[in-house]
Amino acid sequence: MGGHEPDDKGEMNMNIKQFRYAADNFSYLVYGQRFALAIDGGAVQEILTFVETHGLNLTDVTNTHSHPDHTAGTQELLDDSGSRYMDCKTLLSTKTIDLEGEEIRVYHTPGHTQDSITFHLGQVLITGDTLFNGTVGNCFTGDLKGFYDSIKLLMGFPGATIIYAGHDYVMESMAFAKKLEPDNRAIDLFLKKYEPNHVYSTMDDELKINPYLRFNESKIITLLEKKGLPVATEYERWESLMSIE
Image (spheres, rainbow, N blue to C red):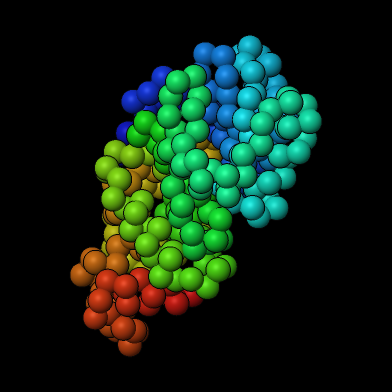
């Protein structure tokens, strides 16, 4: 899926392994030659088996945000590996994680939750429930402006940037996008590349298929106008899109 097949390394000497759990949740393992970091480690046994099989030492465990479906498995991973736990508050203070001399950057991306964070390594973003492949998360904080700022931040990354999200909502999100833009051929092309065993998109993909990132596109603006929704400013268009069910 996406504009090109990722090599799982980006521009740094790190690898990323995606694990599915609880039907549509994703865990991620970021690892080098010896050490590994687990993000949203609900796929406990799969992660531990992978670490053991590859001769790795799981040194750090963290989460994209504090919702229970993302923190499930955290304590078990810590108990089994003796690794260090870094909560979102700590990471927002340090802003980086060092793994084998490589820097993983941490960005505050509130909106879905107040403590939501995004991890950036090489040309990869691990976005949790802020930005999905083809949609965005629910704004449980009620802070639509904060969520908008988070999405704008992520939209600023290069088009080749790979998006690894917290859930696989591809089929549902593309059905909604198709309802809004039935003539958008990019949606059909994206779905043809969808692979449930390795779910990702690129930022270029998102700008073509994700209605919540397309608030400046004329077709979206026309759609909002027909619904009688505000479109005068970029932020009003974002608010209007977020109000559509």
